[in-house]
Image (cartoon, rainbow, N blue to C red; front, side):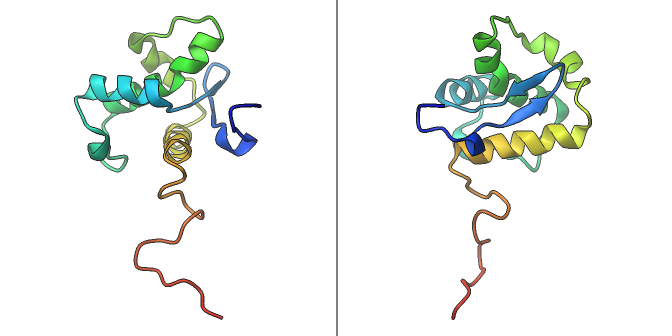
Length: 120
């Protein structure tokens, strides 16, 4: 794959076709500009549907460029309607953010705050 990527680093979301959902530097910079937030105020727990469209849009931009597509925010509502379920969208968005931030807070990848490590 190159660029220090493994298969575990690639998050695919099923919409009109399988699309790579990725939050690299450019996507995050675009997302922060669109939402008016800073990186510390991204809250995946309290997100409205309009924000979901913006988050997914930004995460799909590199996939669209790689496939010669012009993706617009206006197309996101219809594109997201093609997902198998809303939970699929949220799961993949959370997974892609976890990959982007080095699995911070990813389920099963780190101990939870306040958990004690297993002692032998």
